Length: 410
Image 1 (cartoon, rainbow, N blue to C red):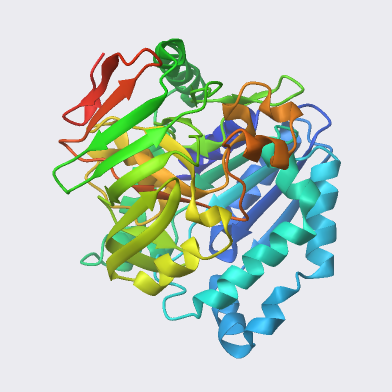
Image 2: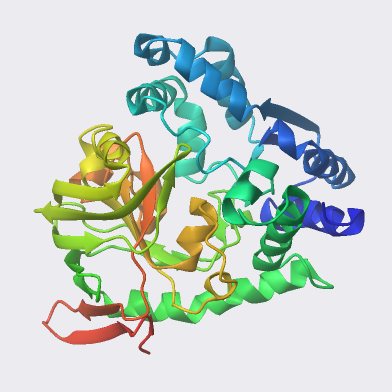
């Protein structure tokens, strides 16, 4: 474990900077039982910041696996009433939502993906306030990392457990910019670094992006006339600034999901629900995934794409330069929060209302009519490489380099 003062500084960063918790606001924390030490410090920092109430929901990954293995798929088609009441309730009360990710990348390996898929669909149906609170900017939400022994041993398999945990904590704190003298100031400066690139991208009004890489990617992604590029922090509809991902290095938008054609090849393994998918490619025609293959975990990839009709389409394209601080650690985290911020990525499933002009005032159906995808899922997968090239095309046909050799071309 990091020293107490290091972990306290991290907890303070999550509460005061990432969540930007208001005086009198409620905080909801979701974390695995392995993160109890960090959670206690988060609770302490939240009350010091004036929280009206802190609600903690602990989960246990090993118990969750037992649950999946013991019960039939039909059992997961109904979402627990008590959990729906809890999640919808905190969202309606305007709570800030903090999720601490620490799962074993292979913790659910071998579990029937149909059960995970059924539970995910049931959760979406049962928790509209919870989901819409995050999707439409009504709630602050933050996801951040916490080192667990199981995760650390997957990342550093040749190290003794205590050394592996120490190394993973070091990587988490470093990439989260929580290891310096003033993490809050570091994050405000980091947030500013996104501004000029977002402004440039939004000025171009690209109608499409063309991706190529040495792995074999050849993909054209259409953009809507009202696409908005965003990155760094986000702002709620009430004007509260927060940082949804700790760490973050991406600038992203939602594409026109009906205008995606070609083949994309993953550059890193995808950890989904405790199972890994490696060396995979997906081919799209008129937006829809029509074929895919993977060297490992193809059944997991098939379950992701088969979640619903929307999961056959893209909801996000994100730009992350090769050689960014997370990539430079040399650590393959096997955790989407960290790995997606180490490389350019795409996402299957739901798009972002805030990435379409006026999108937060539109319904999901209205957004879908404009090309912003709707789905019960949103799964990021990494495609960034050292030789990735991305070319943007404007409405007049002008082609502008966006990425060359894995980094910004402007």
